[in-house]
Length: 137
Image (cartoon, rainbow, N blue to C red):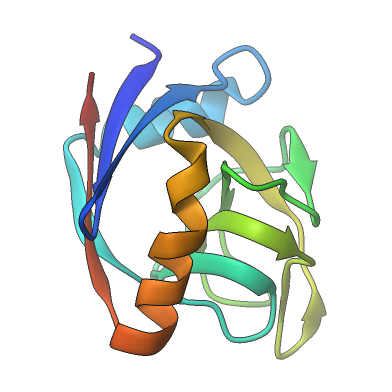
């Protein structure tokens, strides 16, 4: 199973897991399905929403890592010098925290309704946290 359905705020997106490029990250994420949380707008990284995990770190190394996720790419930063988080880019992103530039594992890519991502980002920026559910398609 690599196809997912993401419901975030009022929007529904199709997505695929990048199982060949980030197999360990995808396996970790599959164990969390159905994933339910809230996304908030990022503080330092640019045009993205994120799900912070605080001091809960994942025992996972880098795979398919990037500091510049493209719109529609979701990354996992497993924790270390900053808190663990998921980040979903909707525009231009330079992934960072208060300690500087970070890199996260690109493990999920939006494949359907990509054009609605900026609306989700603006909604989170101006209206606050938005519910997100990620489940099998």
